[in-house]
Image 1 (cartoon, rainbow, N blue to C red):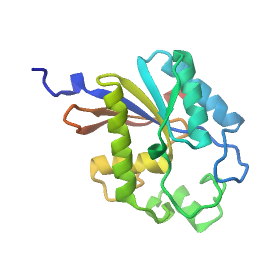
Image 2 (image 1 turned 180 degrees about the vertical axis):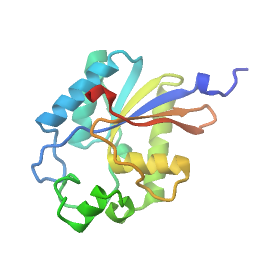
Image 3 (image 1 turned 180 degrees about the horizontal axis):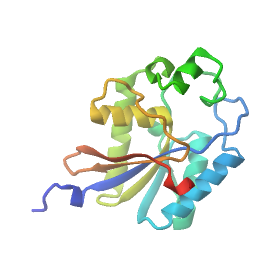
Image 4 (image 1 turned 45 degrees about the vertical axis):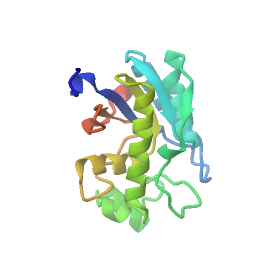
Length: 199
């Protein structure tokens, strides 16, 4: 019987979407800079044995996933569970765009607990875990790339670490965080916030 080890685990790269277009809507697509980031991500992933690419249904994540999947000729599987945390926001704004607000200053100063909107951390962590597990069941022992969102990725990783804050790092646009998922469904973080492909 094969041991349940990291050597036989499924791998997942969690990617934050590229920089969105500042169009003020609740669901903006990628801007020019974000398209460039996603293209560099796709070029970097060309060397990786990617079995599948999954994304949330939001435009910025889906467009990032399409460019990540292109070098491998893969279709993108859409899974709404990889969406951002739910809040009462009616428009999308980057942390940089709200720099002059109390929330923006908190983000810039690394006081992430004062930046995070009120949301159901347990629900987001649970749905992210379930979505990751379903993805790895489709490609057991292989590599899955997931295009998601900064808050949702933070929530999942902080849940794995059992960290008190649901937002403990500032993920760069198209940054990659790697996790291994063992057959026992235990999650192991392998790296966080890698942006080497953008250099």
